[in-house]
Amino acid sequence: MPSQALMLKKGVIVTLLRKLNIKQGLCNGTRLLITGLLENFISAKIVSECNRGGVVFLPRIELAPSDVNLPFILKRRQFPLIPAYAMTINKSQRQTFDKVGIYFDEPVFSHGQLYVALPRSRNPNNVKFTQRHLKYKENCSTKKILH
Image (cartoon, rainbow, N blue to C red):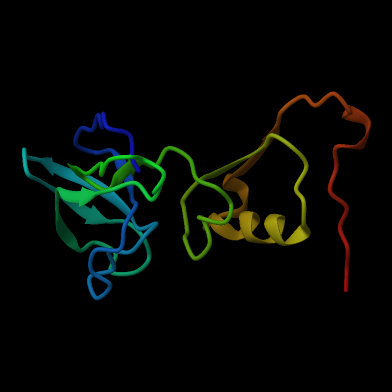
């Protein structure tokens, strides 16, 4: 469930949280640029690779949590969006960006993660790395393994 308070303005990049229309490219993880905000719908431009530049209108939809342990049924009508200031390496698959910043809060657990993260930028000079200062600083590296 997305947060109940969604603060948006024109020009913000958001990620779609639900599959709405596959033919239009409105799937889970699609990135959109907000172009207009109205009470019952949002107009946006697709910035993901699939149908890039297409203008879409997103209505409020009824969402319910998947937790079935509640003694009542909880439903909310809201926009299935979340601001896309950051995303996981897995969510970035099949997407391309002008600039990429990769933050390692812990060492990468597989070389596949690094392989997915590095080519996301159109220009390799626009990829920046940073890592959190870990308590075991002496072994914070990823070795290159050739097959």
